[in-house]
Amino acid sequence: AGNIGAHDIRSLAENLELAARQAYLDLPSIAAIARELNKLRHSIAGWLATRPVDEENDEVNTSYEPAELIRVLTELCDMTANYNARTPDELIRQQPLFQAAGFRSELRELTAALEAYDFDAANDQLKTLMQRIAHSVDPSATPETADQHRSES
Image 1 (cartoon, helix red, strand yellow):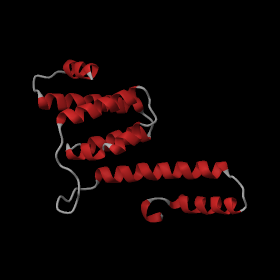
Image 2 (cartoon, one colour; image 1 turned 90 degrees about the horizontal axis):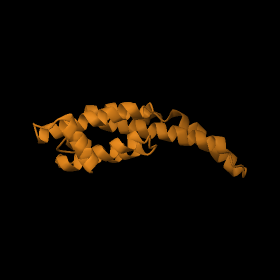
Image 3 (cartoon, helix red, strand yellow; image 1 turned 90 degrees about the vertical axis):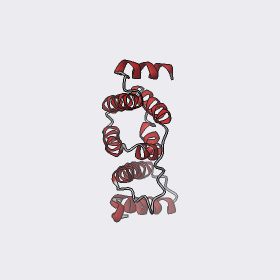
Image 4 (cartoon, helix red, strand yellow; image 1 turned 180 degrees about the vertical axis):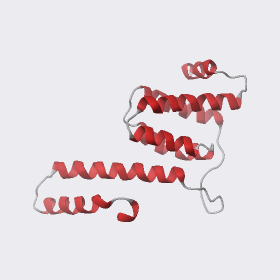
């Protein structure tokens, strides 16, 4: 457990197991384990976003469709605008798409903003990324056309 940053999970699980053997429902211990597991999940997601891709030994898909990425960014943008607590989970689910598109540093920044519960910063980052992608697909694209695309989705 210590190798992956889960130092407290083991002791919390041991305490919970002892309580369960005594037929005691220890809600604070369950909540503490849930918090630690959530921290671990985010830590692993951040690590995955920063590790180099070994294309010979890795199963990472390196192709992506800009339209699909824009659709995902639009969805994430809407989620952050509504302070949706499931946004970090959706970002983790979409990591392969970000990685295939070459947006590892952006993924790290978004993960950090969401870990800090800064949905407004994450939303701004997503909008900026959408504008960059729209401009790469259509060099005449402006921030206004990216926003127009969002409202059409």
